[in-house]
Amino acid sequence: MSLNELLTGTPNDKPYMNVNVNSINANNMRLQTNPILGGVISGDAFGNFHWSAGSGESGPTGPTGPTGPTGPQGIPLSKFVVDGSGTTPGAYTTIQSAVNAAEATLNVEQTIYVLNFAGSYNEQVVVNVDLAYLNIVGIGTADNGPFVIGGFTNQKNSILKLSNLIIEDDGTNPLIVTGATGASPITSLYDCDLENRSTVCIDLGQNAELNIFNCNQIISTIDDAIHSLPADGSVVTIKNSYVSGENSACYFNAPTTSMNVRLNNNSEFDSTNSPCITTAGTVDIRSSYNTFNCINNECFFISSTSSVDSSYDLMGSNASSTYVVTGNTGGVFSYSGDYQTGNNVLINSDLTVTDRSVIHT
Image (cartoon, rainbow, N blue to C red):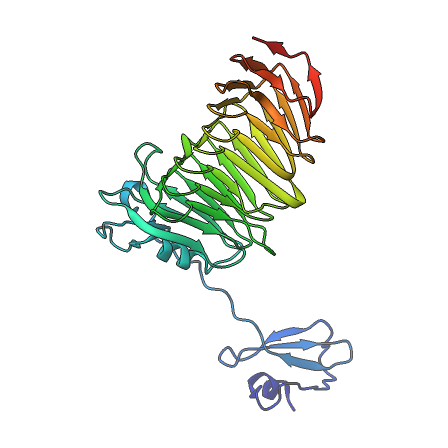
């Protein structure tokens, strides 16, 4: 075969061809074939030519498209937007429908914007799948944000963050339900207002992480504000928030596996008929620079296998002939810089107590 035949032949007929050429030094020779057929001829030191399919050249990069329009109040339209009034084009009308759509992309953080309108979102929102990472943000402030009459349930291996929402009860259910056997959900509340007039505000189950930051109120007017189901292996952090219950502000129960509670800085815990903080099972509480007020009972009840480490907390009880801190034999209470108000005895002697320079008033 001549070199000309090789150059103009059909590569599909001979996708690999060896040609001995005595009069041409093929070493390091590289020839382009017919431009219609494409491909490359390469030579080697033995006078052999080899054809191989070539790669086409890349075309120029196209121009960048225009920036998309923004939605109401500057929210990008590519995000999930909920408008209960139904007046925002392309928006969902319920929070649950937006959650269902956002859950389809797992392991990727998704933000759902909830617009305020004259009505309220009457729904119990449930996170249905594992590994969802959802931010649900109310457009407004905690004092003037979207109203949700119902609540949220997170019992999967998911991260749920709620911000700037006003959540009230539907007459039956808790406002937040989180934690379950075999799952490890993380639920966080930022700048939210919660009030329940029919049952507890938050039901805390097993292996959950609950974070409450900068919330104006977490209130139950009839029961505990935060109630354990129980909550073995759970972790709770509360900071710069107000928590109040007709019974306990917080009832923490971990009968099998211990739970950790961190009450950090500038929070207030009020209760009427039960201790502000009640423990059962094994609960480790560390509190600093918070205020505890109870009308008819103690500020803390510490069970026999629980412990409280209190630093610079202000404790007050208006009840007569009771303690500010009490509990069962074996419970541990360590404190420093704490203040007692009223005429109560500070600590029940059944507890194991470490006093670090306490000041009585």
